[in-house]
Image (cartoon, rainbow, N blue to C red; front, side, top):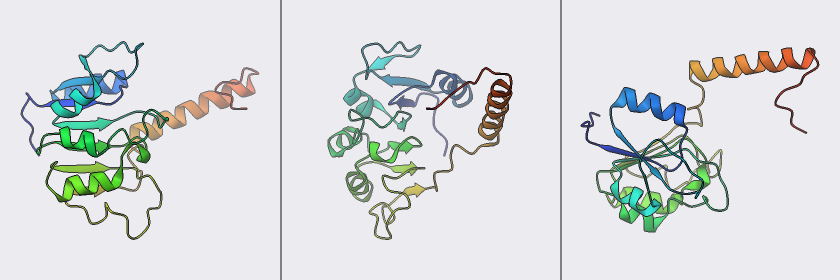
Length: 172
């Protein structure tokens, strides 16, 4: 699908390295949801409801916390443009899935791409299985060649540090 350069992509959270790459490669604006008072973003920020209202593509890149659980709900989906898309490669419970299914089936938004669901594997009667214009992948977005290479590089460095007597990334 071809998006004009003037389209706005909004982020519920921000990974600056990925954002710089995406901004260069897709030539779009980035708007960051101002969800923490200590957030310092190189991109414009807005209140979260405004982000939902203004977005053409809303991508979620945030952890699951009590504050973010259900952040995409019926009220916020109703704020979105009928041409907007929701993309979630983060955590399934960020989205109220029955509300998203309703928004898709009623044409309130244009589509959704989900790499995660609230329950994995989802039950056979999951509401998003039959939702219109919804693509679900098996939680595989992390597995790009570059991501797998970074995983191997970190693993090798961790093992070398451990063998050298200076463990890194210790989980206790």
